[in-house]
Amino acid sequence: MSERDADLELVRRAQRGDRHAFDLLVLKYQRRLARLLSRFIRDPAEIEDVTQEAFVKAYRALANFRGDSAFYTWLYRIGINTAKNHLSVSGRHVVLHTDSHDEDGEPYDPAGQIADNNTPETEMASRQIIATVNAAVEALPEELRTAITLRELEGLSYEDIAVAMQCPVGTVRSRIFRAREAIAAQLKPLLDTPKNKRW
Image (cartoon, rainbow, N blue to C red; front, side):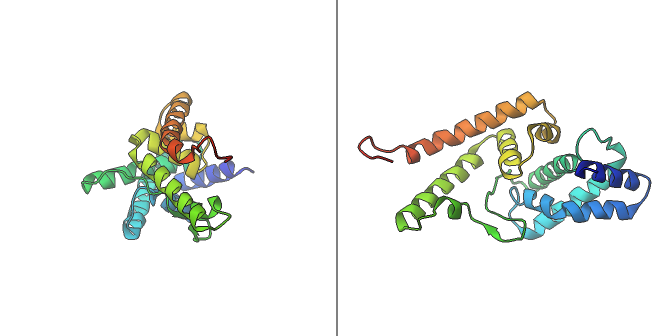
C-alpha cells in the first residue's frame, strides 16, 4: 500500500467518525507542516498556533476531501492559506524565511554545503550568495515565492503544487521558471568571474 493510499484510508476512517485516524494524520504531518509554515512566520509560538489552526480547519473540512490529490497536498494548501490569513489579520505581509531545520531538528545551513573549503573567502562568498538568494526570494511576488518554496524547499511535484496553489500545472511551471530567472539574475554578478581568472 502506497503512502497516499494509507493516508486516504486514514481520511476515510476519520470521515466516518474515527478521531484516532485523524490523530494519526496529525502526528504524521505536524512537523512537516510546521516546517513549511516556519518559512512564512518567524515566531515559534505563532507557528505552533497556526499549525494547530490549520489542522482544525482540515478536520472541519474533511468531509469535502475527495482524494483527488494526496492528503498532504490538500493539507499544505490549508496551511499556506491559514498562514496568509494570520499574517494579514496581524497587519503583516508574507515574507519567506529560508533558514530551517532538517528532519532531526538540526539547523540546516546551506552555507555548509556550498563551502567545503572553509577559508574565510569561501565562507564569506557562501554567505553572500545565501543572503542574495534569500533577498531575491523575499522580493518575489507571492505566487512565485510560494511555488518556488513548495518545489525547492518542500520537494513537491509540479502536480502537487498545482493542487496546493489551485492552478494548472502549466502555471506552476511558469511561476517556478520566472522565480528561478529572477533569482539567477540577482546571483549573476556574484557568480560571474573576470576573464583573466580560470574560475
